[in-house]
Length: 74
Image 1 (tube, rainbow, N blue to C red):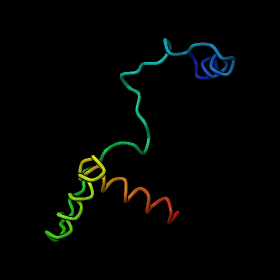
Image 2 (cartoon, rainbow, N blue to C red):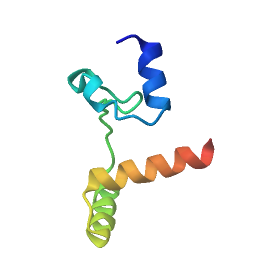
Image 3 (cartoon, helix red, strand yellow):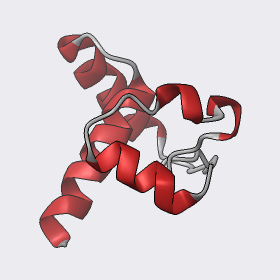
Image 4 (cartoon, rainbow, N blue to C red):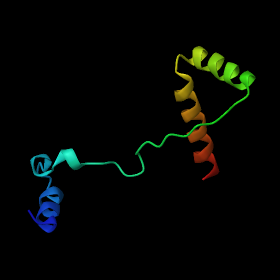
């Protein structure tokens, strides 16, 4: 199917899920990239304490805080 035909079908509200090869689908800017950061022990302990209080992992807490800060700065 040509892109133009796909777009017309989609814009008409038709179900195009059968026309998509989901094995090749990706979400731009959401690919993961590993980053290592060294913190002093007291920072890690404070992060762990706050993460436990909120019921999340340390990694989730750090991701959330960084994302919030970047959104404010934008």
